[in-house]
Image 1 (tube, rainbow, N blue to C red):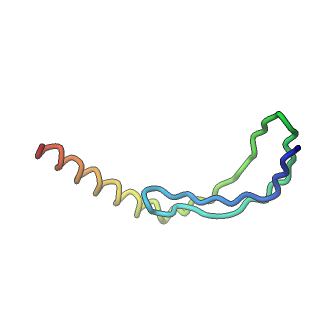
Image 2 (spheres, helix red, strand yellow):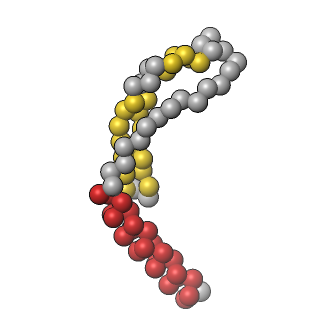
Length: 70
């Protein structure tokens, strides 16, 4: 039985910070016993990258301090 793909929904979540979310209208059929790559274009909220980077730096500092104490 073929698989029909008509729309995909994506959420880009990195460590609890949502960097993107949206839908792609992709229309394709994947025949039985085969595989296909489904093209998806992501819309990344670049203004959220700052929030993510600050979070990553804070986590790295905490992790470093924790290892130094052990």
